[in-house]
Length: 165
Image (tube, rainbow, N blue to C red; front, side, top):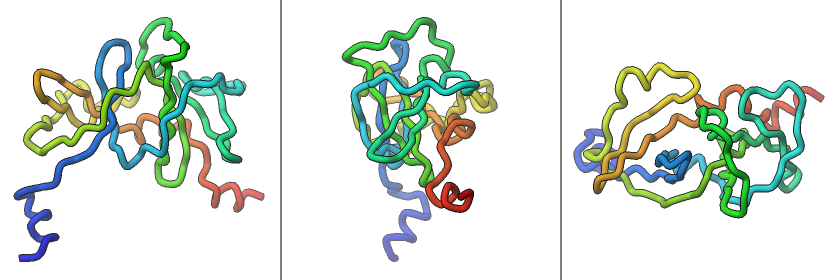
Protein backbone atom coordinates (compact mmCIF):
# COMPACT_ATOMS: atom_id res chain seq x y z
CA UNK A 1 0.00 0.00 0.00
CA UNK A 2 1.48 3.37 -1.06
CA UNK A 3 1.84 6.41 1.16
CA UNK A 4 -0.94 8.34 -0.61
CA UNK A 5 -3.44 5.51 -0.09
CA UNK A 6 -2.70 5.45 3.64
CA UNK A 7 -3.23 9.21 3.99
CA UNK A 8 -6.36 9.20 1.83
CA UNK A 9 -7.93 6.50 3.98
CA UNK A 10 -7.70 8.78 7.01
CA UNK A 11 -5.81 6.15 9.02
CA UNK A 12 -2.69 7.72 10.46
CA UNK A 13 -3.64 11.05 8.89
CA UNK A 14 -0.85 13.60 9.22
CA UNK A 15 -0.90 16.29 11.88
CA UNK A 16 -2.19 19.65 10.72
CA UNK A 17 0.07 22.62 11.43
CA UNK A 18 -1.39 25.89 12.54
CA UNK A 19 -0.09 29.19 13.87
CA UNK A 20 -1.83 30.16 17.09
CA UNK A 21 -2.23 33.76 18.24
CA UNK A 22 -3.94 35.86 20.88
CA UNK A 23 -6.93 38.12 20.27
CA UNK A 24 -8.56 39.80 23.26
CA UNK A 25 -7.37 37.12 25.68
CA UNK A 26 -8.61 34.23 23.52
CA UNK A 27 -6.52 31.86 21.41
CA UNK A 28 -7.12 31.50 17.68
CA UNK A 29 -5.33 29.64 14.92
CA UNK A 30 -4.85 29.68 11.17
CA UNK A 31 -3.35 27.19 8.73
CA UNK A 32 0.43 27.62 8.76
CA UNK A 33 0.53 27.24 4.95
CA UNK A 34 -1.19 30.64 4.60
CA UNK A 35 1.47 32.39 6.71
CA UNK A 36 4.25 34.14 4.81
CA UNK A 37 5.91 36.09 7.60
CA UNK A 38 5.38 37.72 10.98
CA UNK A 39 6.29 41.39 11.45
CA UNK A 40 6.16 44.08 14.09
CA UNK A 41 3.18 46.41 13.68
CA UNK A 42 3.79 49.60 11.71
CA UNK A 43 1.05 52.13 11.10
CA UNK A 44 -0.39 51.60 7.60
CA UNK A 45 -1.42 54.28 5.13
CA UNK A 46 -5.17 54.79 5.51
CA UNK A 47 -7.50 54.29 2.55
CA UNK A 48 -10.94 55.87 2.15
CA UNK A 49 -14.11 53.78 2.36
CA UNK A 50 -12.24 50.68 3.52
CA UNK A 51 -14.26 47.71 4.82
CA UNK A 52 -14.61 47.36 8.60
CA UNK A 53 -11.34 46.54 10.34
CA UNK A 54 -9.14 47.50 7.38
CA UNK A 55 -6.57 49.87 8.83
CA UNK A 56 -4.97 50.70 5.49
CA UNK A 57 -2.15 49.43 3.30
CA UNK A 58 1.60 48.94 3.59
CA UNK A 59 4.32 48.62 0.97
CA UNK A 60 5.99 45.27 1.53
CA UNK A 61 9.02 44.99 -0.75
CA UNK A 62 7.09 46.56 -3.62
CA UNK A 63 3.77 44.79 -2.96
CA UNK A 64 0.73 46.72 -1.72
CA UNK A 65 -0.69 44.76 1.20
CA UNK A 66 -4.00 45.56 2.95
CA UNK A 67 -3.79 45.41 6.75
CA UNK A 68 -6.82 44.16 8.70
CA UNK A 69 -7.12 44.34 12.48
CA UNK A 70 -8.76 41.04 13.41
CA UNK A 71 -9.57 42.50 16.84
CA UNK A 72 -11.73 45.19 15.21
CA UNK A 73 -13.26 42.72 12.78
CA UNK A 74 -14.22 40.38 15.62
CA UNK A 75 -15.70 43.17 17.72
CA UNK A 76 -13.07 43.51 20.45
CA UNK A 77 -13.27 47.03 21.90
CA UNK A 78 -10.37 49.50 21.96
CA UNK A 79 -7.46 47.43 20.64
CA UNK A 80 -4.01 48.65 21.72
CA UNK A 81 -1.15 49.26 19.30
CA UNK A 82 2.14 48.85 21.13
CA UNK A 83 5.54 47.16 20.82
CA UNK A 84 3.90 43.74 21.30
CA UNK A 85 1.33 44.18 18.50
CA UNK A 86 2.09 41.85 15.59
CA UNK A 87 1.13 41.65 11.92
CA UNK A 88 0.88 38.22 10.31
CA UNK A 89 1.46 38.52 6.55
CA UNK A 90 -0.65 35.97 4.68
CA UNK A 91 -0.48 34.66 1.15
CA UNK A 92 -3.96 33.46 0.20
CA UNK A 93 -3.83 31.98 -3.27
CA UNK A 94 -1.32 34.58 -4.47
CA UNK A 95 -3.15 37.44 -2.74
CA UNK A 96 -1.33 39.14 0.12
CA UNK A 97 -2.99 40.43 3.29
CA UNK A 98 -1.77 41.33 6.75
CA UNK A 99 -3.72 40.68 9.94
CA UNK A 100 -3.09 42.49 13.22
CA UNK A 101 -3.19 40.35 16.38
CA UNK A 102 -2.27 40.91 20.04
CA UNK A 103 0.56 38.36 19.99
CA UNK A 104 1.68 35.22 18.19
CA UNK A 105 1.73 32.18 20.49
CA UNK A 106 2.97 29.03 18.85
CA UNK A 107 3.17 26.72 15.87
CA UNK A 108 1.00 23.74 16.77
CA UNK A 109 0.91 20.22 15.33
CA UNK A 110 -2.75 19.26 15.62
CA UNK A 111 -3.66 15.60 15.37
CA UNK A 112 -7.06 14.71 13.84
CA UNK A 113 -8.33 13.48 17.23
CA UNK A 114 -7.66 16.95 18.74
CA UNK A 115 -9.99 18.66 16.24
CA UNK A 116 -13.71 19.13 16.77
CA UNK A 117 -16.41 20.44 14.46
CA UNK A 118 -17.51 23.94 15.44
CA UNK A 119 -20.99 24.43 16.87
CA UNK A 120 -23.67 25.33 14.31
CA UNK A 121 -23.83 28.96 15.47
CA UNK A 122 -20.15 29.55 14.62
CA UNK A 123 -20.26 27.83 11.23
CA UNK A 124 -22.57 30.21 9.42
CA UNK A 125 -20.99 33.50 10.49
CA UNK A 126 -19.37 35.37 7.61
CA UNK A 127 -17.54 37.75 9.96
CA UNK A 128 -15.94 34.88 11.89
CA UNK A 129 -16.01 31.67 9.89
CA UNK A 130 -14.76 28.85 12.11
CA UNK A 131 -13.16 25.80 10.46
CA UNK A 132 -12.72 23.74 13.61
CA UNK A 133 -11.99 23.83 17.31
CA UNK A 134 -8.73 22.37 18.59
CA UNK A 135 -8.83 20.95 22.09
CA UNK A 136 -5.46 20.14 23.62
CA UNK A 137 -4.05 20.12 27.14
CA UNK A 138 -6.95 22.11 28.56
CA UNK A 139 -6.73 24.77 25.83
CA UNK A 140 -9.38 25.50 23.24
CA UNK A 141 -8.18 27.13 20.04
CA UNK A 142 -10.62 28.49 17.47
CA UNK A 143 -9.31 27.71 13.97
CA UNK A 144 -10.46 30.44 11.59
CA UNK A 145 -11.16 30.10 7.88
CA UNK A 146 -8.99 33.14 7.27
CA UNK A 147 -9.42 33.10 3.49
CA UNK A 148 -13.21 33.36 3.81
CA UNK A 149 -12.89 35.94 6.56
CA UNK A 150 -10.71 38.21 4.40
CA UNK A 151 -12.47 37.63 1.08
CA UNK A 152 -13.55 41.28 0.93
CA UNK A 153 -10.10 42.79 1.59
CA UNK A 154 -7.42 40.82 -0.19
CA UNK A 155 -5.32 42.74 -2.68
CA UNK A 156 -5.56 41.62 -6.31
CA UNK A 157 -3.12 38.97 -7.44
CA UNK A 158 -0.20 40.34 -9.52
CA UNK A 159 -1.61 38.72 -12.69
CA UNK A 160 -4.92 40.59 -12.21
CA UNK A 161 -3.10 43.90 -11.90
CA UNK A 162 -1.21 43.21 -15.14
CA UNK A 163 -4.47 42.35 -16.94
CA UNK A 164 -6.08 45.61 -15.80
CA UNK A 165 -3.27 47.75 -17.27
